[in-house]
Image (cartoon, rainbow, N blue to C red; front, side, top):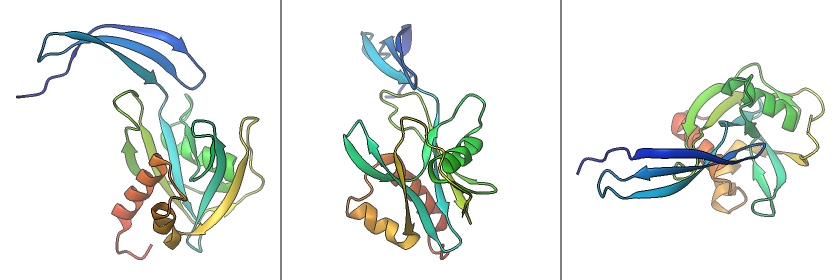
Length: 184
């Protein structure tokens, strides 16, 4: 059987929040002809960035996450704001969350965070030779600790459960797929 997209019969914005909207799509299955409601979180795209110092240390951030009610170890990241392209957003998030800067970043691609219920992308970038440029520029809803970790420790941190954020793990997967065996 060849898969076909479902026919959208109606689409309604249910509620809007600062970082996402909730939408209900009423759609018909091309296979059964039956229609059903589907709930979608509309969001701007996200970015994350793997920042590497000249000593091959990853600049990580530790922060409290309300969804899991826990402190997580991650790479810098955030929303792509309307005035930004993904690379500019990644470099901005790096500066704001860590105080580190980079001249440029290289795209490692993107993933769909959860295409079953979300419509956005998460772009991943690599910034090499990042340098501390001053204090963090956290907003009032952030409490972020900067942590430097040797790049070689990242697989162990993932394996041992110190890094559990799926988008961070996907970012490092992309990194290691691009740089497997080149000594980086």
